[in-house]
Length: 411
Length: 193
Image 1 (cartoon, one colour):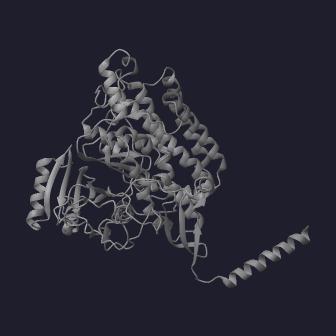
Image 2 (spheres, rainbow over the protein chains, first blue to last red; image 1 turned 30 degrees about the horizontal axis):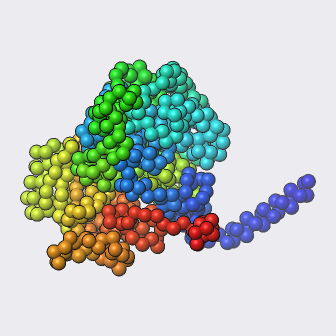
Image 3 (cartoon, each protein chain N blue to C red; image 1 turned 90 degrees about the vertical axis):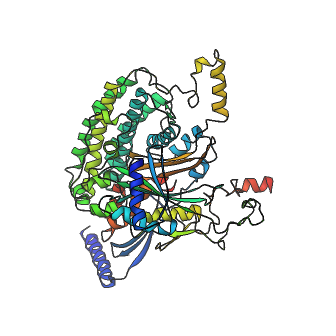
């Protein structure tokens, strides 16, 4: 055995010796992806390496481009909703809100208070869900395999809630122009409340696993720093910007839905390294569970969808008794509603930053242009500077902390 | 948002420095927009960014839209944001299509729009790139080029970003034919030739 070890050590020494002789300043271009577990989707990176140090980097995107924006131009307004959900497939409620909010601004439709609270509730559940997927997969990249199972355990409870209220676990098509399609069912409130109570405890458990983990701390602290000014120039928003110490959150800055009536904080970081990015997102999960609990407490009574029959489907019970309802129903499901000409850019705070939806209406029942300003797409531009002159392993860590969703990048 | 009088004030101030830079203003659904001369769009963006009283320093989105029957047909939109006052303003530069016939025969200028091949030899509308001013515009200008075929002068890397490099055509244009592409599955070849 000892002989073998000696022999093995000799081989290793010889190998590294040879490597030492070969070690030059030659730059090698390496391709990573598009199919690679560490790229969080179908992202291809062309990396110039000097030894193990990244000297230049170019993300190549477009592998999951499906032409959703073009397809939207061929669908009536209400049929666009399932399309836009599938862009950023982890934060589907946000896509729906950005789009429905833009259409509501175009037609001048006010949504009832209960719908505002229900939307806020589901948006925040979705934010927790999105951050859980991020935390699980990014910790997995850094070798913390158990985090994935813990995060997906809680994620499953959120998906159960989505299924209970909407019938679907993902891509729920729950938000409609004018409100939400159905009220929450019996028993939802209790289940949701128990989740909102548990979640901060679970987050505490995640922190206990990661915050004192030597490997995790060494891999994240002081890595991937980009200055706040540079981030702003690059158009970066969301947790990445907040980790650099900028308390910019559209939920506070341009209050929409029920956010002005809710009490929550905006966590910020100090240095803007990968550790701060992790801290900010984890703290956001706690804040979001507080918002969920507050939404349940303050949930107003009343209709869950606006009562404007020109834009909103009539209740099913009326179809057999009211001729007008039948006509409206027929018009809405065949042609759809017409939207007066105009254009609107509606921006909301998605888990990754500012999610903007631009809708151009030409007066017909189909949008002339739907464009999404997706935060993953814009934030990806800062990746080169995060990974520059760091090790390849840190580049993978920075990519995870950047949290791009390639469905949103490519649309 | 600057309100409607605020928008007119901005217009007036730009007019004083650069006559003719602002062609129109619109205030619709609480959103303020300046329609500017495409040749002077960089000057207007610089003014809005650098003037102390304005400070629209964050470009939240750059996108394009095709207003097809209208002329000029392409609109480049710059959604600017002032983060201190939380005000948004949209700068719009309208470009016409140099490849379009001028309709000298009295016919509608675009009767052959669908038949016209969209190839690389076709002249493209172009506008100055604002990457120097707003580095965030790099990907977004490439995206606009990719889908609308609008060339940004001075962009460091004016190539397609989401579509394959060898793709022909500008798919987000309204006259781009929507239709299927033949999918060469072996099953289809066997059964349908």
